[in-house]
Image (cartoon, rainbow, N blue to C red; front, side, top):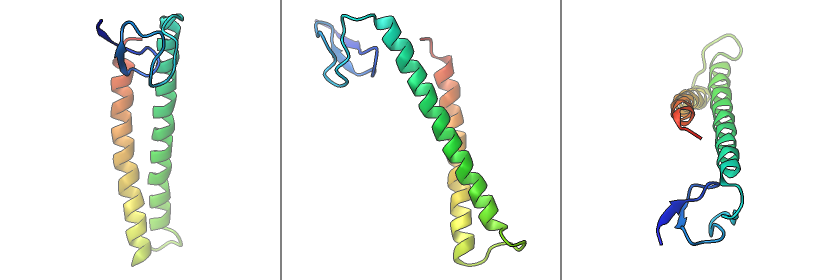
Length: 105
């Protein structure tokens, strides 16, 4: 009995198991299709995270320059936080996307 990766959720399970204890995927089904579907789902999730981070970045820039003048006080703090979180989140997500695309399905 060895530990193998579930083709659907990538959790470590027994090679003798008939279904994954984490995601309940059947191990008797076509594992290649489950692996491809899991890869596509992860790609979509990463693209959604990237879009969300980019939206947060743009919202921070818009909030900073709303009304023509640069922000002051609480508005500057909120805009700077949104700008920074969006930028860092976008960079991290893009690196994850590149690493994910390098994986073979």
